[in-house]
Length: 268
Image (cartoon, rainbow, N blue to C red; front, top):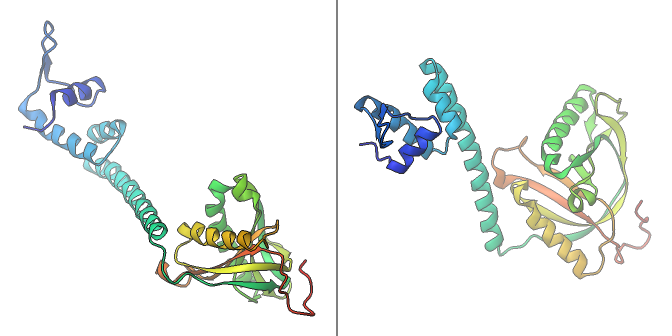
């Protein structure tokens, strides 16, 4: 009647999820009543949604409908978050298997030193995305509060150890005109000049590793890669549009430039 097998019913009894109405003391045979069918149906559907046994038991033991609905809603929220993560991973894999025919161009660029408001920390790679989001929000709020004018797009400087050792220094910054007063984590910083190979990554940063791979391969193939931090410039992002396809991020890889224009100053 419930489409639950004998093996499943035995398991649910053992874990305290659905006890039989009676058990034969001699044979161990389990007997269930018709009144237990609704509970069994609820259990089956919640388990189909991959709700852990402990949470299913909490739903069944909840005192009222509001408590039950809150537990189920929390699980559904987790499922939706996991689904969004899975979709992002699928899209990233498809991009890897079917790269766009019009690969973005790579250019050499001499980046001048700039004064900026910045937030710097030594972070673990697993935590850097959350840290980056918080730091960028704090920077933008501080720049507005101090009445400073941005002198370019926000950016980030990331030590190579953050990727190779999963732990390293990171700085998020907003170039500004004027004097930055230290507030909270925000301090005045100078982002040094650099010679870089630059590629424009289109779309979510979730698959930015594809652009990093193309850029790093280019620098290595041309034997111009040098040690130094990596850079990102956020030309267009979530604050500008919710359409991830419209996001634009410039990624910079440190290089030795043999093609630097005559008279150009060496990088810092």
